[in-house]
Image (cartoon, rainbow, N blue to C red; front, side, top):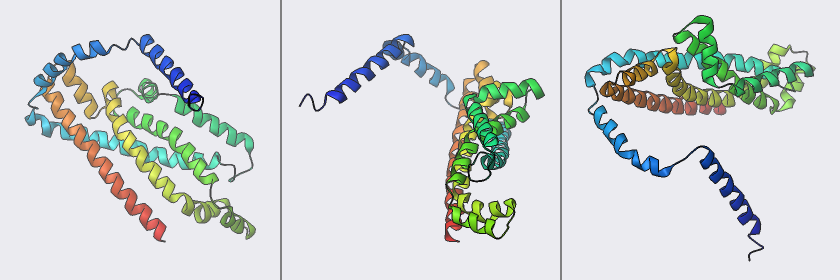
Length: 259
């Protein structure tokens, strides 16, 4: 019986040691967390009731956050499809270009969004524009790889048929590749939009504009009731975008599959 589960016990023991060591290095202290609960409850008390009178003032920053995420996602998805074609084995025979594109995508995914944001802030200054560019570049790192993988998995028969009759590369992509990868493109792009909504709020904290900037400003000025109003708007915004993306995903993918 012991021999049967020995490998599982060994794995569990190694995992427990790693977790324990990590907690010691990171100074994880559950007792300190418990002691901090009263302070947390006190902070929540300062935030209630929300500053309802500020709700209308927060609608414009919320809309700006939505626009930053939307534009960044659209730009990123468009670039990702082009880069996905360059990174696919079945779209061209230039191995160096394909490997170089894959390396660029890997390097981009390794960069945190905040670092990319600060890079664009240094170039163009604070505001919504560097936030849009940061989200677009981050979207390319994720969507470029997903699109490339989807393109490589297409059925080669339609591609070969069009090549046999002398179709151009653009025609092959339009009539043989795009119809097969369209559901994947829509699903992954909408998922990335949901991610970008949250990231645009975080980037607003470091100067990208939007409601994230209002939130951090209220907290720094200890206007906690205004901060709670901003948190409520953020929750409504994220929920609305998630539900809208879910409905749009079902509608667009469903119509494509029925063709």
